Amino acid sequence: MIFSGSSHPVLAQEIAETLKMSLGSRELRLFPDGEIYVEIKDCVQGARVFLLQSFGSNPNFHLMETLIMLDALKRAAALSIALVIPYYPYGRQNRINHSGAPITARLLADLMTRAGADNLITMDLHSESIEGFFDIPVHHLLSSQLLIPYCEAL
Image 1 (spheres, rainbow, N blue to C red):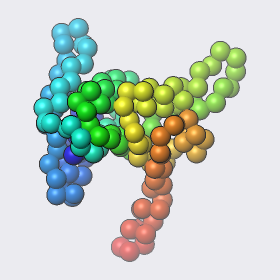
Image 2 (tube, rainbow, N blue to C red; image 1 turned 30 degrees about the vertical axis):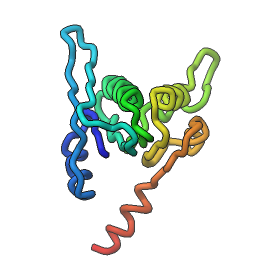
Image 3 (cartoon, rainbow, N blue to C red; image 1 turned 90 degrees about the horizontal axis):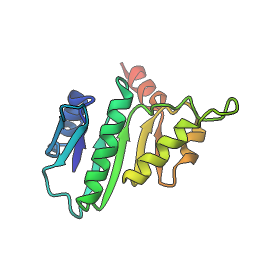
Image 4 (tube, rainbow, N blue to C red; image 1 turned 45 degrees about the vertical axis):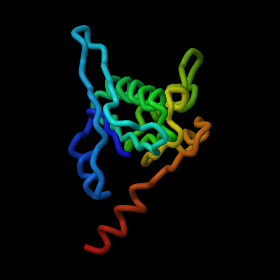
């Protein structure tokens, strides 16, 4: 099953169509105070689920939406949840540059895993060291390996 957040509905729909699947049904809305509400409408019990979300614009909002969706899918008893995020936010914050600085890329890995992600599929990480922040399998795709052969064939 494939679900998507609100960040890039066109991309999600194109991926689902390419795979000859339909997107899972979910409700996403905001409460009057700006809090995010998520409800998974399809039965995901025992299903292998892919959750697609892009963080290119408004990463903080879409990150919170993703965490809530992961938790909802986990609590609905999905067998596994693969998180597909083409762009990994906060990737440049992957080491301590000075005293008092966070390692935000690690924090995100912990949050995503704790919220329910069993696998991560992402592209062009700022640093390969980010893969080591996860306790789950990370599939790090490189756009150059995908785009160069395509361009050469044109």
